[in-house]
Length: 292
View (cartoon, rainbow, N blue to C red):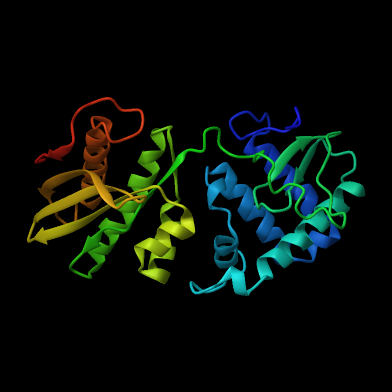
């Protein structure tokens, strides 16, 4: 690997610097006149900085960038590869002309969709004929060191389709996903990304394959008048084994939804922190039950 080429955990380039570089690139006519190229490049950079570099595959790019349906089959449709080729050529054109003196170079090695950030003067990938497979066996340049395990929160199941429960479940999934980011051994897949894919597929195996998820946290909400009970579990997607579970019980009113979300998330994180099932934890606790 070139010494001036960096992984996310090592790079001196902050997200702010990369965003500034994007604005320079987007002033180039090739990008200024193409919504797809701007959206494609922004998406793969944002996902990489979010820790989801392993999620950047033809399918997810097709669905999220090109608005393809959940039934999109990259093996039968080369549209992602076509636009990726356009993007590589547009970047090469920019750096050969307007961006020749830019300090930060952004490139996308052939055979992958993970962007590479290099300093001015380093060797950039080219689109020369016959070199399509030159980079296929290279070690990934811009990935999280150690390739963090991807964890995702599924939307919690609930049984009363009303505004209160919908608000509780939606907020709970988002807040829990954000809270899981404290576990440095995991890459957390964005909740709304998971939620959107789940609505399109309703198939757990497809969701896991699409987003390359290693672990899922799922649960349900049961309500009886002003009492609420939630069962939560963590599943190893590689073998379907339930690694951990807990149960929360508390009060539910229209006035305490935010407080209830806070309490449930705090409870789950506390229990996970004490479990030996999260990578890096050493406790012997396994199945946990508590009442608020």
